[in-house]
Length: 202
Image 1: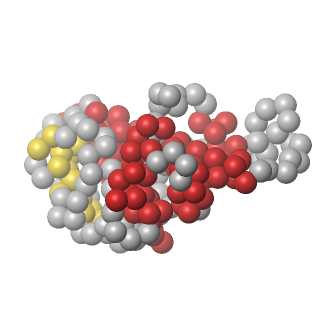
Image 2 (image 1 turned 135 degrees about the vertical axis):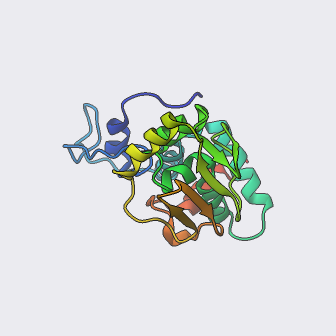
């Protein structure tokens, strides 16, 4: 399944707030569709599926990518759910978003793919690049790149910079100090249900 490119507010109405996908808030508080206002008893599978979809749509990854992240998290030490969230949060597109370089994760991904973002002084155009502690995330030294990022910094997607990052607005340069802590992950999601969803597949 390819990356979702449809109406974002429709997804937000169905799954709840997704800070990485859209800055807009829907006018209607119920899910979209003809039966959106009907009260339905959801199965355990439906609840797990919804939590999994939150991760997919918020971070903009495909089903195949998410499954790969789950398998990688399983092999790592520690809580599988927490490691999964950390892997997704430490992607370059998400890190650029958390630094305020892009208004949303899709916006930050476009900056990365168009070659406006550097890692340790070199242009990296791979959104899934895993940022590591010590990495310096900067803006390409061109007027167009700087103007794009400066415009986005005036209206950052999230108000607070997480504790694992630091950012110098004058130099347009950020630094990754450590791996993100669970409490700084803005998405409201139950990662254990996501791990349970994939327990039969991964």
